[in-house]
Image (cartoon, rainbow, N blue to C red; front, side, top):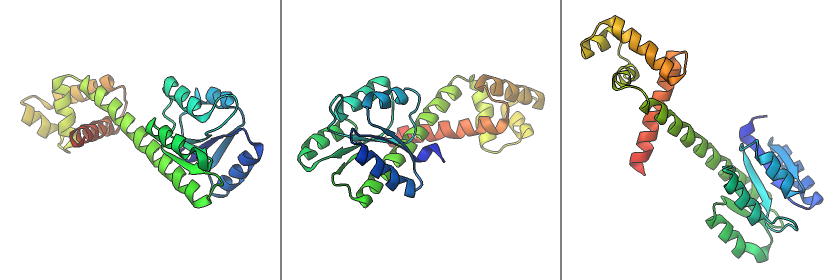
Length: 209
C-alpha cells in the first residue's frame, strides 16, 4: 500500500480506533492506530508520511500537546482533529496553530474522507515544495558555466549547439556536463534535468508568492 495513503489515528478509545480502522481499510487506506499519544510520537520520529487523526481530549497528552510536540520535532505530518461538539472553539484554535481540519463526533464518513483527502493533498504539496527547495539549493551550488550548460540542456539544445553558443569546443561542453553531474551527485543526465526542472518550479513558486 502506498505510503501516500497512510493515516495515523491517535485516540484513547479502543472502540473509536477499531471503528475508524475498519472504515478506512474499506477505502484502501493504510492505517496505524495508537491508544497512547507517546507511542505515536515515538513512531513519528521515523515517519512523516500521510496524515494523523488526533483526538482533541486525551488523559495524558491532549491533541494540542501532541500537535505542539510534532511541530517541535520538525515533523510535517498534517493534523486532523477529532472533537466533540463543545470543543469546536478549541479545534478552531488548533487549526490556527497549523491543523489542516477537524471532524466532529459522532463522525460522518463523508466529512472524515473529505478531511483526509485535504490533509493528504496538503502533505503532497508540502513534499513537492520541499523537494523543489532542495533541488534549487543543489543547482545554486553549480559554477556559473555549469548552470549555463544545464540551462541549455533544459532547452533541448545539443552539445554542438551549446558549444557554439558558448564559444567553446564540444569536448569542453562534454567535460562540463560530466562535472555538473558530479557536483549534483547524480549519475544520469536525466536526473540532472529533473533537478533543473524542480529548481525552475521553485523559482516560479517564489515569484507567485
